[in-house]
Image 1: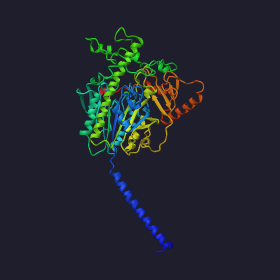
Image 2: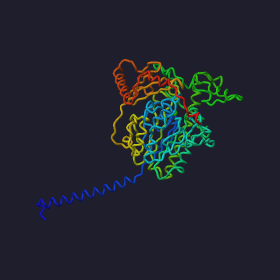
Image 3: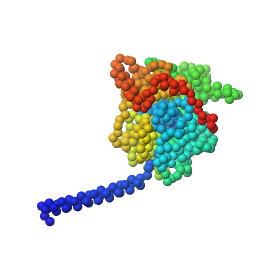
Image 4: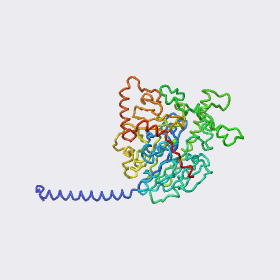
Length: 536
Ligand code: CA
């Protein structure tokens, strides 16, 4: 064979090409068969209630050293920690509805807890979509959306106290039918127990599963499991930098009714009532403080000392509740590992919103200020998310549904307003979000927080209180992380204010929240009775 013969050369080349394509074909077949063998991931979505980032040690915030959460931190250490995840309306029901639907409150219809009616369970939610795609789904623990859960093969949700549930003697509704009062365990332990029990004994093991299990803790009235009574009992805990905020330059904040000093009641701080009171009298005695009434546990405590005493009492109980949650999360992580479920299970830890642990002198949530606007969010998915990674992009609770669907290989329906951040999790290219939009409606109950909307970028935050005032606030978070220096209408900030207002309008149009201020006020004034309690 002559090398110089072009025909021969062509023949050899064609042979090589054929071999190459055959090899590619075999490789493709092999990969496809591998993919079809690959099981859809299980999802364990753990949510607590009112758990702030400052009380999760993975965030290395001001309580991290005194109150570590080693088990929750494991999720971040083995996966990704999100630093700037926000909710779209900082109260319980609305955040939960946004998570389920991937839509803002004004679109999914559940925008207030007080006088806001019940969640429309007929609408599209991500558990329903998972179910339609072969997943087995369950929800256990706090639900707080009024209507019976839909989209779940199994449900066991708290129904006493208007769906708030209680820390002890919690009443649950199982599968929308059976009422169960659990007397044996503190609610945190009960929820953890039921969650593991469902994975172990109640599910169809041939299907991938998605379990949402949701603690009442550390919600008000912060009643920990008695076994944590001695935790922190030997010391005072630190105070946040803004503990003695005077609210100057922030009119809406100055009208609040959520101060530790002035609006915590006797029940919140576990005072022992006098004996012999009727139920009505006892309720009245316990409630004293809600509306600013003065009380002191003894005559010697006044002023600054009294405020500090209330704070210590509050923060310790709150963190004891967190310790219970942390312990329960550890049990789940251990269970999944010991039962060979770790590798193919995505685990999320989050809370429906943040909470004030003395920042601005407050407890509770609602505001677009960072402590209540931020949500903890961490996620692990072995062999997919790099352990110990940190995400600093702007994310929202409406993104959770599209992201979890995306991770399960399911397309996001077009009407979901959130966006999948799967590519960020998998370290692939993604589109950056410039700003996030927020809207809170509930007023005056509870805590007299003015309805407001606003926009936050990586550096700035602009808030508008529009209900019965016309007040704007502008903060430069890079200079003023505690948001105490309102720069609105200050010299030198005209351009940035103009840009942020343009961004705000753009987001209102994008999310279909561009109604008139009168229409927005009407949403606050509309009272829709909850039907839930009358049904059960
Ligand atoms: Ca909550």
